[in-house]
Image 1 (cartoon, rainbow, N blue to C red):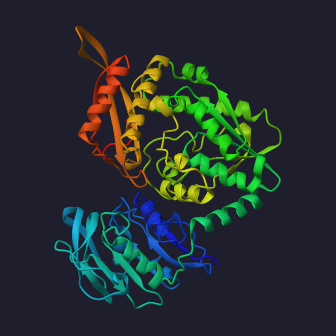
Image 2 (image 1 turned 135 degrees about the vertical axis):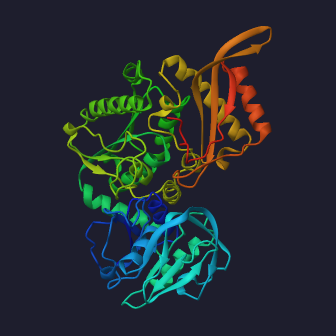
Image 3 (image 1 turned 45 degrees about the vertical axis):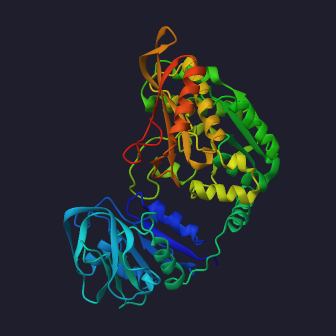
Length: 510
């Protein structure tokens, strides 16, 4: 039976980073809401308690029965999970004198299997307003920092050990956090590190065959990494019983419709292209607010997709390329995580379709999806494509979307992306795009004064899209691309570069 680690979600968005870090160590894990019943199967090797936006001292603070858990498996509490563990056993957790956020130096207090091979003065990442002021009896401090007396603890007086970390080992700022998690998984929980891309493909294809049987699957494809990998997995299970539909919504990148269809033909996928740009422009007319535009595109997409799907007979299943960040930022399916924005591919299916949902990538992050795609043999040029929002260029045009503005942004974006490739910078950034601002300014071109649009360039570095930093592109590149856009794209006379990180900004502007 496959080893499994269970993560109990108390609402922190860091929860998803814990899952990614565990899977990168080739151990399978699942995330469930803290209040869900736990099935203690033989394959369950350990439990991790996540962080939370709540305080353990709040009246309605989420609680789990930790004494019951450590009678079954080893448990690791992270941040809120550590504080909850301490409080339930009689410890004291109170507000810190000051909010502790950012880098700190971990100082080892005593040897512990959890901190095996960890250097004293190792950098860790703090993000909390409460601190453990006093540990319960029989709890031992195994690490501290200059500002907090309890950075890590262990409790060994139960059938299985209980560990707590006040810091976040799952974020890359904790330089040896991966080693700590590895110690918990392999040394303490005795997991086998055998969950690999090849294993995922074999298991997923088999599950798809069992679920779909002789059924037919319809799937909307976008040309992006997620839908391409999902379609390839489904195609591996059912062949041409997968019917792909690729819709030109009028807000794709320049020449994207034709190129994507050619790529799918190369992969041997059964895909039909639909030119519906007029339908989308009509739906977007007069709309200026970001959510209005997202919803208009979502509704229009569903209308076109529903229309085309009904031309097919015997369809039983709907395939989607939904991945974890889509779910996390849209619907709190795994606990009370905050909602940030709506996604047109999560929920909102027309009830009339009455199709069963197939989402083979639902629990994967973007970097995992790319590794799966490489194992499937999908060409690097397709896997290496930057993420592109479902609503396309519509949310990179601030204000009302018109055909003229789309054409303007397509041309500018094409210059930008082509320049990134020319300078060998395309794969050095996680995502890049141009944003057309609803701002005109005065410019001088030759002897003429112009009054034209301002274009913002965006490029970020990231691992999973949950957090992102602005990419420090070379000045000579920025000078080149600004000059190229202004000289070749009539209607733009000013180019600026966005140096905001996520958080507090988002990757897209809308």
